[in-house]
Image 1 (cartoon, rainbow, N blue to C red):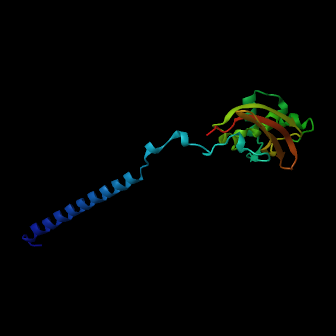
Image 2 (image 1 turned 30 degrees about the vertical axis):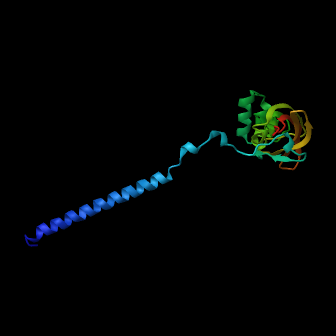
Image 3 (image 1 turned 120 degrees about the vertical axis):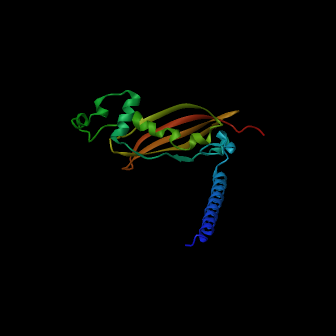
Length: 201
């Protein structure tokens, strides 16, 4: 390259670097705009609208025969251990498999309350429907019809079986059932809830 060509080449190199810098700045601005567009407007968030079910129910909205299916659950040894921790019950019939086998049982015997807790309405949708209208959980009763052993799978459900209206509230009675994988009914009971009637207007 001739000496006289060197300034021209330097000028071209300068222009090239300047062009790249300009291009980089434009890309950076474009990327920044896209990033700003994707950022959610957190001021629109309303905790009061953060609900499992937005449409709330009142006493009049329930009908006899309506069912609420609750999640099935295999009674693993981990479930047994969790119940022992929560209940404080340490009798070996629930936690010592050899103790159970020596008494003719095939596996650990689940405490009746361990089966019962799987009928808790909060495992399903019912309580989320009555967040505004629920006054209280009045009572529950249960009958334990067949034994539940470790590794059994249980299928709980609740069904509306009675509606007793009052002046401003009503009592919703749910019948609770739990079946096992052999289609045997192992638990049956009732739960009663006091629910507000729909406000006037």
